[in-house]
Image 1 (cartoon, helix red, strand yellow):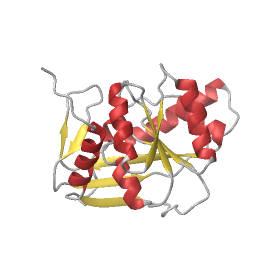
Image 2 (image 1 turned 90 degrees about the horizontal axis):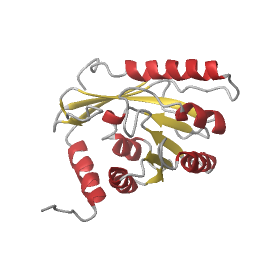
Image 3 (image 1 turned 120 degrees about the vertical axis):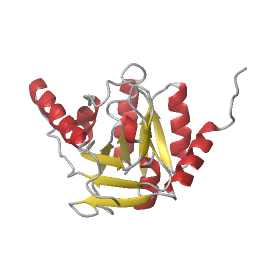
Image 4 (image 1 turned 180 degrees about the vertical axis):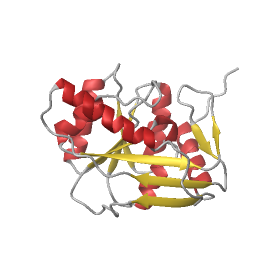
Amino acid sequence: MKIRLKQPGRIVAWLIRTLAETLRYRVVNEEGMFYPSDARHIWIFWHNRMFLIPWFRQNLFPGQHGAFLTSPSGDGQIIAEACSEFGLRPVRGSSSRRGAQAMIEMAQMIKTGHDIGITPDGPRGPRYQLNMGVIKLAQLTGAKILPVHVRYDRAIRFKTWDGFQLPLPFSGVEIEFALPIQVPRRMTEDECEQQRVTIEQILFAGTREPSTQP
């Protein structure tokens, strides 16, 4: 017998908030806080580190409009519902379903003052491989790509394709904002690929262990 939960997204949001309140944080932002700002950003972070991102957005940058790309799958629906609880507007799409429509919707969101959150190796991997769609969106909109690194000093690592990480209660968390990256509007295919590889390497470098305990 299958047990179906009503409004699972709200349950996930409750879990995020409850766990987040127990954690100790260290924020690394070498450029300095960049909000409020007229510049729009495309937040990118690995799929296995996304658990606390909605909470970070709401608490570090209250009032700044945001949207979040999720897959059209059932799991994506739960994520969409959870993100909505933190004031983020969901955009549904993936490389295999609604990809072009999602790109148009995200571009419109950026035009109307929203930042976009994307897991560039989601929704099905390969793990730590950055999808070219991030580059294309930055070219289309002029928004800067903002790599966001999230590191836990103690976490449960699930045996999923992405090795999803869930921080343990009362552990430390380090969130690091790398320097925003402005992608040229016009590039050759080779230049696009080189840009993709460079950003992928920057984001992968953030998977190291926390430099200090928060």
